[in-house]
Amino acid sequence: MLVHNAGVSMPAHVGESTVDQWRTTFEVNVVGAVAVTLALLPALRRSRGQVVFINSGSGRAVSPGMASYSASKFALRAFADSLRADESALRVTTVYPGRVDTDMQRELVAFEGGEYDPTRFLRPETVAEVVANVVATPPDGHVHEVVIRQR
Image 1 (cartoon, rainbow, N blue to C red):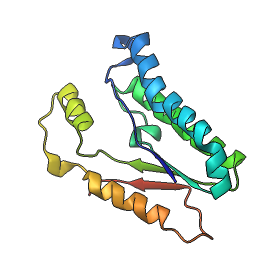
Image 2: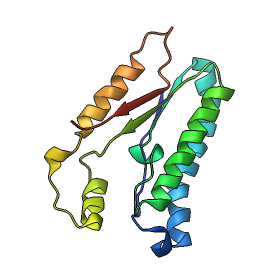
Image 3: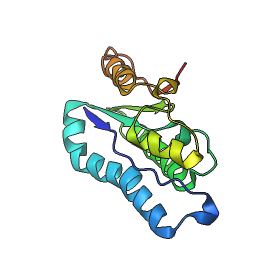
Image 4: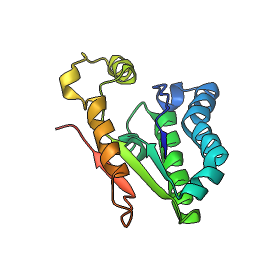
């Protein structure tokens, strides 16, 4: 099993963003996942393994000020979908959590000019439990996508 959870966010509106921000965001959020997946693909094939991508709500809908991040998450979604289409022996799942109580979220709230209240966000443990449930799906099932939002 391979779980992709690495990611960076550099909040900026399109006109305020830089090419370096875009490169860094895509290197970490997309190219990193592609590189690790390709390196482990032979073992994943042999084991008929599972790949889980922790994406983001920004991989389904764009938010103001999240240009490079949203674009990278849409690209990650396309990679996961391509992997699922090309490697039928693998189970490939994309999890789209809403906003999660992390340091990245604290930075985003500061960018937005808000006050941070961790009770407004999903707990990381909640996302981890969702992933555990996906992985525990019986062998005859294949969960393609999970969307989880805070209450």
